[in-house]
Length: 236
Image (tube, rainbow, N blue to C red):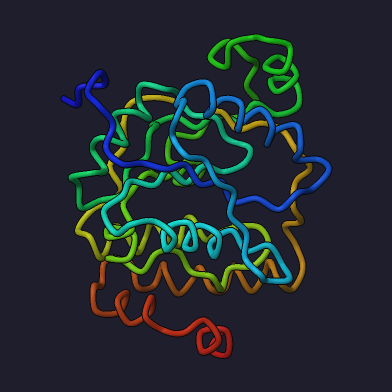
């Protein structure tokens, strides 16, 4: 059992972020939460020079900017964790060979629940539009060493979706099991949704199919994550 009162290892918080009007309120609330609950822990935002915002690329960049065995909390700009599970994940990540997820319940608050939170309702008491127990996004906790050991996230996923599910398959196959979860919840705040249709979305669907096909096959997955993004794009 992790001692949540023990001193923290070297740790930083990284939030992938490119300003968008509908996301500003959520971003401000997330940053405020981290500042209040982890005072003194460095917090940075991360973007890349890609014309399109590529979440996987930002997460990989966040890891590449940290020391090899420094713990990095990669938090989405709309997602608030709970303090004790996050502290447990940070301490475990310092010594673990798997990525840590500081939750086993993902709550999407939606418009109504987010309105509750903004008015001061504790997140656990806010109205919820959807609960997911198999989510694998929102907040990741790991060292760059562990992140690199299974290829990080695939930067070929553009626009909405699937980079997290593909990463989960790669992690589970290459590291001998899924990320380690800690009992707790994360709370996703409302913002305008990204498009989930069109040519780019279909390309992501097709790309995800390759990860599903390689799941459980260490050799096939190792070859897949090692393939340059442009080559995989041509093969899609």
